[in-house]
Image 1 (tube, rainbow, N blue to C red):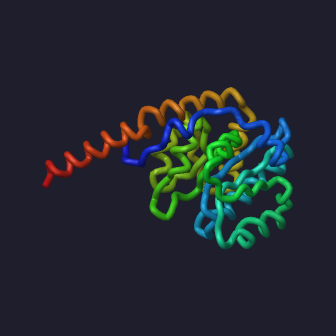
Image 2 (spheres, rainbow, N blue to C red):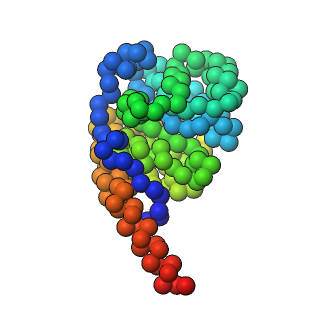
Length: 212
């Protein structure tokens, strides 16, 4: 297994969504939430995200898209395309969160990430796993190694239809979401805990030293 970094398993843990926070964001009990944590930049494929969500929303009026992140081009990349697609009333722009970030993360029934960060990191996937949330992602970088397809989420092709289908499969099956979320948390405890990552780093160091 690769070296992906660690996640604070105490700060990020499986929790039920905060009812007060859901009400604050106008989320009704029947609403289902797809969440994404990403800096709003052109290369992060928000075009794909919105096209896929539009496809899903056409089949299910109860879905909502929660975006945690900020960026200079929010209007150009997110707000204006969402308005053209008729998604403005289903889009929740929560901005950049700090202390309450885990609470917002726990609002999502399923999390998604389409492109790794500029440093190649996939921190949002580690945090999602720690929170016991299944993930739908694409086969870029280390993401298919972090998300075990069919066990902790789905790794799908970079098309709107494939992404929408992955979300729909999870949102329509609560038991599957729970089981995949539990599997994701177990994987986080086994592989992404700071102590485990420290041992991985030490092993890599000794391996490199032995080869030199």
